[in-house]
Image (cartoon, rainbow, N blue to C red; front, side, top):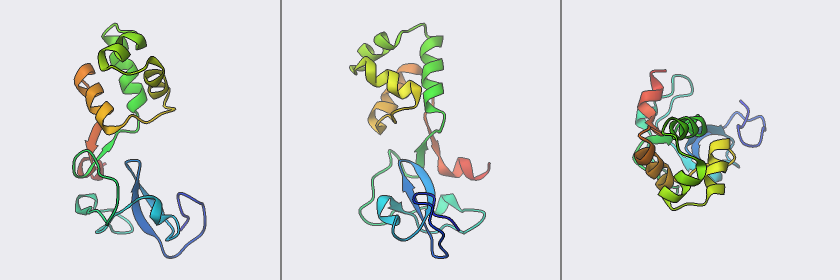
Length: 134
C-alpha cells in the first residue's frame, strides 16, 4: 500500500484524519493526523471512529467538511445575489478570505464554516457514517 501523504510503499499503515479527510498513511506520517481506530482495510467502518490522543477536534463527532465546499459556498452566495464583499462584511471577515475559500485555495476554519452554513443556508459538514453508504 502507498502512503497518501508521502507516497512511500508500506505494508504497515494507519488511518488518520488530516484536515477532515481520512487518509491511509505510513507510521512516519501518522503523526500529522488524528489517529483513527476501528477501521477495516476494505469496507471501512467509519462509524467506529475514535480519536487517538492529541489529535485535532472535529466540529462534531464523526463529521468532516465536504469536498466541494468552495462550489457550495460560491453557488449559495450568488443565488442570494451577494457579492464576496457583502458576504465578507456580513461574516466580519476579509473579502480576500472569502475569495480564497471560494477558489478552494483555503479551507475555512470549522467556526467560519458553521457561520457560512447559517448565513447561506447550506450544509458544509457531513457525518462520516453518511459517506460509508456511498
